[in-house]
Length: 194
Image 1 (cartoon, helix red, strand yellow):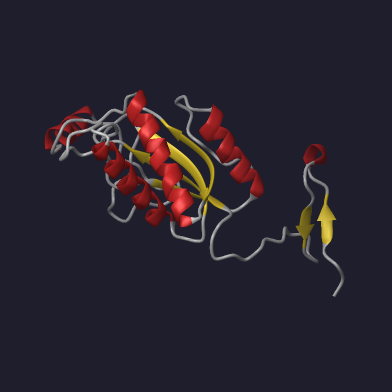
Image 2 (image 1 turned 90 degrees about the vertical axis):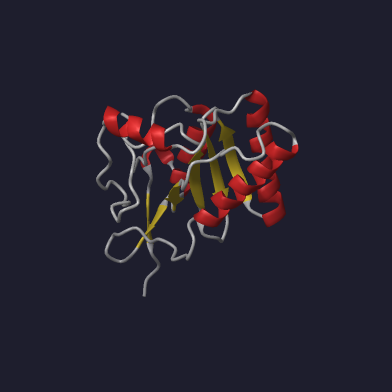
C-alpha cells in the first residue's frame, strides 16, 4: 500500500491526509478533540422565544425541527416557572468562571476558552468524557460557589435544564469555537464553516 497523499489547504493552511481514493482521512477516536458547551441561566430562554428552542421529545437532533415562535407559549412557560428568572451580574459571572476553571483543574480537563455572560456560559473543553457530565459538573460547582459566597439565595434556581453540546472533531472547528467564545458574543450563533 502506498503512502497517503497530502492535499494542499487553502491559503497555505495545514495539509490534509487523503486516502487512495482522494477522501480525507480522519482519526477514529471515541471522543472529539473538544466540545463547545453552552448552558443558560434559569428562565432566560423559554420555549416560544423568537430565537428558537428544542423540546425533549425525540426531535433533539442537529438541524432538527425547533419550537416555533409563540408569545402565548412563552407566556405559559414563564407562568410555569418555579422561581424568578436568574440573570448574572459581574460578580456572579466571575464566580461562575472561577468554578468552571476549578472543575477543569480538578478533573484534568483542558479548558481552551470560557466566557460567562449575563444569561449563559460558554466553554470549549477537551476531555475524554461525555459532555453532559462536564456541563453538570460546571453547574454543580458554580451553584455551590455562588451559594457559598452569598451571591444567590439558598433555594434559588440558577440554571435551566440541559445544555447545548457541540462536538468539535476537526482542529479548525476547535479554533473557530475558541474564537467564537472569546470574541463573538453578540447575537450570532456558532456555525461550522467547512
